[in-house]
Length: 194
Image (cartoon, rainbow, N blue to C red; front, side, top):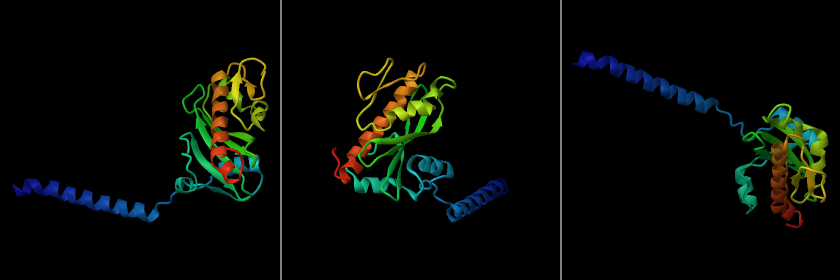
């Protein structure tokens, strides 16, 4: 009977030993990259906010600094050494979570600029929102914007990109999230209106 159990027991011991070695190796070599700004992201930050030192605000720092709960669409909050702030916001356009936008804010709570970090909208249609002529329309906005299909009649209306209404609305949603987040956090810290 023991001769039948012995191979299974030896195999189990070898498996436990190898698993323990893997756990030790992982713990010795693991590097947390969640707070690291990649070269691509740094390039986008420089494009929007100029040269400088950038750091990422951690979830813990957000919780300790603000009573406003960070919206789930905000993936990262990037701080520049001069006090500038940018939000990486992921929202749905036509595709679920198809827009990954970096939105830089001015100290007065208005949008400084937008850069597309990633886009998985319909090629040739939804991807048209990546055009700087469209994105530049959001610059200077400090209140909620809305997308319209015809020529805008109000200051905070922006005309949708032709054949990309859902994607255009996604960009507007991301901008509105960034404006509100800045107003509720850094805007109040700067003595701005909330």
